[in-house]
Length: 172
Image (tube, rainbow, N blue to C red; front, top):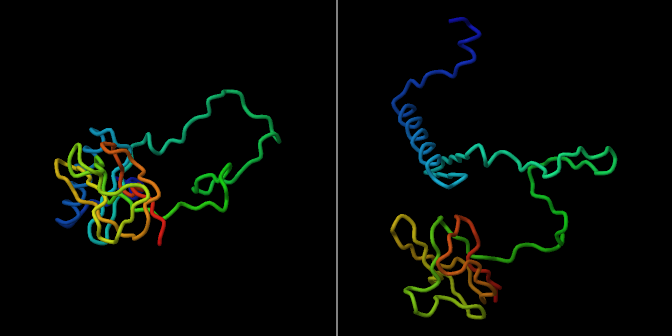
């Protein structure tokens, strides 16, 4: 093996912890490939890992094949931030209670019963606002805000993703 080949290959893991971590990453990557998810985010302690399918990294191709004429379309720098074109620059997202995990959202404790919260009703910190079913477990979602409910974002029975707004709240 030449010095150039040795420099191109990553060093072999030397410690048991490194080997276990790499094996865990391989298992998570295989899980991601078998799922319909485009991204998998794992956090433990102070360490986080985000795995993405290659499809999630490729930007959507334009639908036209003709090249734009120079000077007709202004060039905008790519910053990694979402475009703000067409949005009200003064509008910001209202305060909301976000899903702590991905799963199926249920607005009431059982089918046919009253929802935990309704638009126009008040919510207190620590109050249950819904359930999220993940891996056959029902997780109570509690409010971290107090105020008046202005919008219940997902329908009951809908799939929600982690950090997706569930309930928009107007502080009192």
